Length: 99
Image 1 (cartoon, rainbow, N blue to C red):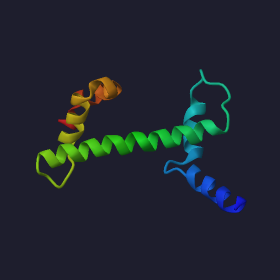
Image 2: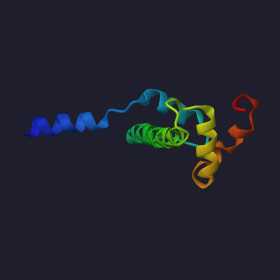
Image 3: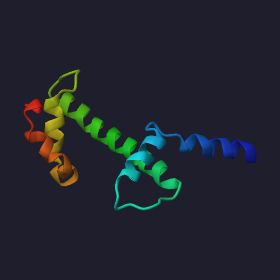
Image 4: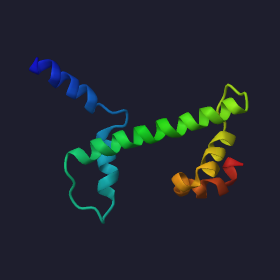
């Protein structure tokens, strides 16, 4: 029984974003000193959940347009409709590449 619960815990810790890369990004910030081992794991999972939520909203936008493809239009729409959550992405809307 103990072995199966350990295996389940190990499966839960797996993330889609490489923990080593997240750790390197965190270490690039000079204001951040040392971090615990769990910080990159938690950040990796948070990134994964953020993208899952954002992409789900983009899919909903595409469906309301009766489209099978998500497009930059959906990206912009999600940001504009949820500016209180995605205010840090607002500057991306001004770039010519997105228009």
